[in-house]
Image (cartoon, rainbow, N blue to C red; front, side, top):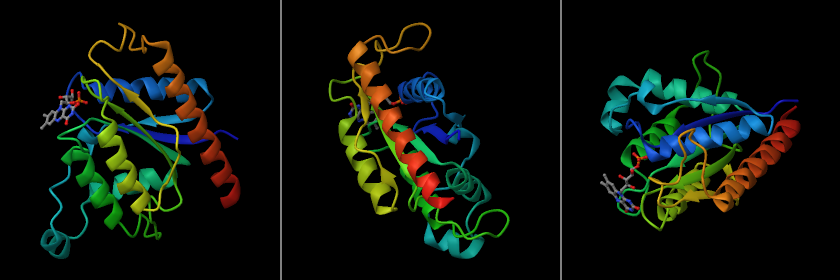
Amino acid sequence: MTVSILVFAGSVRGQALSGKTADAATRELALQGAEVTRISLADYPLPIFDQDLERDKGVPQNAVKLASLVASHDGFLIATPEYNASLPPLLKNAIDWISRVKQDGSGRTIRAFAGKSGAICSSSNGVFAGIRAANHLRAVLVHCQAEVVSAQCSVGRAQEAFDEAGNLRDEATQKKLATTCRALLEAASISRQRRN
Ligand SMILES: Cc1cc2nc3c(=O)[nH]c(=O)nc-3n(C[C@H](O)[C@H](O)[C@H](O)COP(=O)(O)O)c2cc1C
């Protein structure tokens, strides 16, 4: 049975390094047999989370759409940039809104991240490769009860890390990406079997 994976980056910038990392992960997951949905958070704009706004206007439709996408896939992979040693506000805000969604568009109860298999990639132009952002993102997702695989791939010096076709130049980093994708697909496949 084909495993479905949702992929997105924590940046919507043109030429985003995390976008390139997400694209490389998308290709690797597809190569390993997954059915991959690659989305951009740019297509799901959200206001900064505010509990007054939530009380007065409810959860925005884009948050419901994102939560429904997470819920309807067997797993997800997020490629995060690093801002001041942590995950960027765009990504944290999207996760915060998703965590507040209780029902999908059809009124079915959902807790998008609960029990969902996830994987993390990070990238940065520095030598730390966004590892601190990846660690913070892991803590956030685990808090939301996602089952995040231990394997993760961090791309350092990311401005030079990709060739013209968008593939990782460094063999060891590509191997790490393949290992991360394999671990995610195994976990997602097991949890899918558990559900069925
Ligand atoms: C507000 C801000 C803070 C940043 N802090 C870090 C940092 O702590 N560590 C790091 O490696 N890079 C840091 N950077 C550089 C980003 O990693 C770099 O801009 C990266 O390309 C952004 O991700 P993107 O290419 O996916 O948009 C920071 C950039 C910004 C704008």
